[in-house]
Image (cartoon, rainbow, N blue to C red):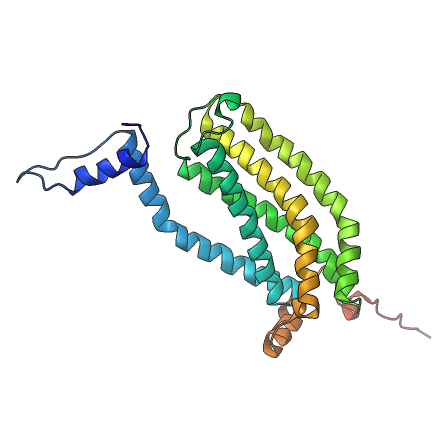
Length: 251
């Protein structure tokens, strides 16, 4: 039976389901049992972790943009990046494509390394998201229409984001030279995810989504607009605070 295969993991569950003789407490060990236990431990906390990330991202992007649509759009596009990366990594490392080139044996992906890779990629993607969205919002706030703000905003930030993503991707690709398959997966997966996000997501899907949404991309209910007006985050200081106090003439 192939180690770490579905059949091996199923066998671990079947053995543990057996009723042991009275007075005995048998334990099941080995790499397959460790994999089953690791997957169970990690998957039990994933919903909580995802919930915290989604809520935190939504709140911070709302405070920054004043829109409830922009955080949802950002989360949806980031999910596309993660799903695309997972599909590519599954085809390479689990199905065995490019195994002869990279020098590894196909096997189920290391779950802990997969979760770590996704957390890092999500954080970097949101970093690019804030960078691009801040420029678009900066142009839209004074009254520029959404289509023009997106075009000019991406024109100012697109090359910077792409160049930064390429440099960071090369750093991650360096992990692909390791002889350990989980390190190769982490490096190649992170590097590809960053390139997908910077080129396909920021360069294609973000302007397409913003164009389809139009002015509704900046929608927020009235009470949330008032909340943002009081507690929202801004790159610039309010004009009243920025203006110097007039000098007092002393006669």
